[in-house]
Length: 329
Image 1 (cartoon, rainbow, N blue to C red):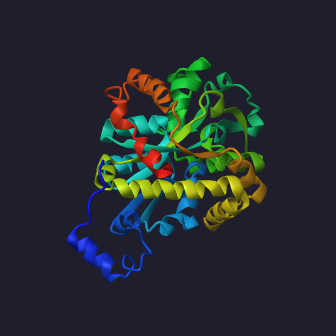
Image 2 (cartoon, rainbow, N blue to C red; image 1 turned 135 degrees about the vertical axis):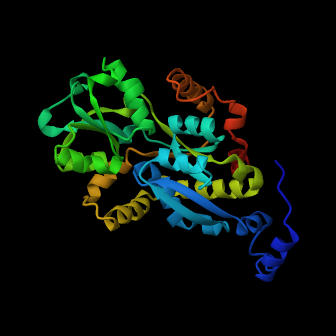
Image 3 (cartoon, rainbow, N blue to C red; image 1 turned 120 degrees about the horizontal axis):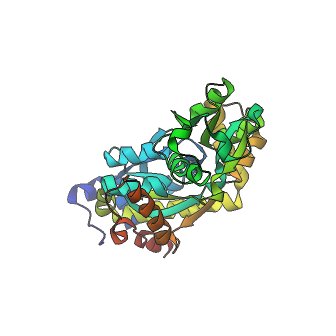
């Protein structure tokens, strides 16, 4: 894709600001100044790297403007993107493949691996240690989410459980701990920090982690229209991600401060140590690994078998590693 030239109107607007003439902004940032990114993210731990990016100043440093759209889980961000309400958002492979099938969404980066953050949990007093022991119980599940699909399509069947063997209670991941505490559900499929909170409060114990089945890489996806119209903005956006990604490795305390403030401001009672434990399970590593395609191929084959997608994606269209290559260049 070629970088588009500025329109006369865009050039006049930016020239009038004095930033171009003063040399404060380069040509890449100039383009970013006339584009507002609609950024979606989930409010569970998977979305916190994106939340940190938005608070880190890395986007502003590169002249990028954004609006943020927060939802309980990534599959909801995916649905917003299919409806073209949001330009960019993160979610795991199942939601990405579904989003490409339903709305042509494309992957521009892998942000993190979160398999260790996601668990099947059961109320502590039930003393359940095996998935097979969930038979006949009420299980809270965010239907359509990546972890929800992993449970129903992989984890439960491997334990010999059919869908009629348990009662699936549809709810958002952020509602499950309270429901377990109230004993309206027996078990749940959730994600940090809610799992760590449930464990710390003595409400539930871990039956199995998702990492035992799937490392769960989380992808930054985009609408095809956004990347086609704004290729240089996408490159600058990924450069901002690379900048923010360094903080996760070099200044983890700084990152956790921002994320802890987010949850406490929304009324969650959580010890700092609990969040530290949850964040330790998030493996942030910004890039575009070479093993993405075979991993997603396997997921797509499973979704096609379950008739949740209409066809295996054309990976040359669905995966766009060239933006990350330019961002690193």
